[in-house]
Length: 212
Image (cartoon, rainbow, N blue to C red; front, side, top):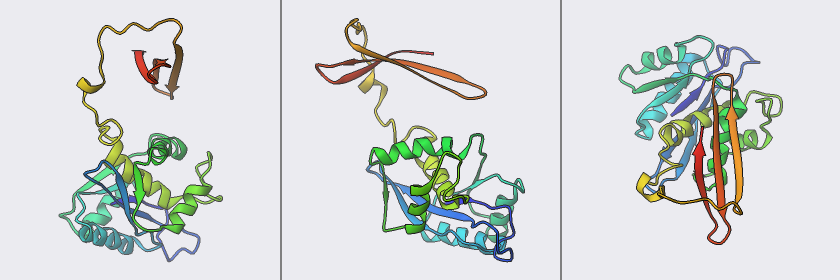
């Protein structure tokens, strides 16, 4: 169960953002399933109870909450409702767009499915822009979805890279000069990473042959 908190007190503030609450699970088939959207506009007591109720209903392993505005406020709210809940705090070190990109890639690969329709969540997904907003509003449901999928599928590469090293590593392969090659890099304010790859057109296999 993932929570994206807002910086307001909830339904007592008419302009306050919703508190995004999304339930997701990782199946034995390697697919991440979105199970429920519990997003609401409630006081801390209200959304805390909503999240814990979903945690209990779906037999979740933990609640994941974004550290936001009030610091450890989310954990305090959850522990007030039920001190025995398994809780994990996550911190946003990158912008919304960058956090969502790996999740979007999983959607493209067919590795995330919705169990039923979630029209408000899907509207946020369809209108989400590089400014981190959906139709000019904070995408609370989408933010919670990103945290849920990241926790389930991306933290340890569980879903994206399920193959063992023995299945993907080949020794002594020489890369012919006529193969199509590509170099790609990614950087942020702290780190830089680069990968070199080549494609064998006859077998349509891509080989990663260097990294930095």
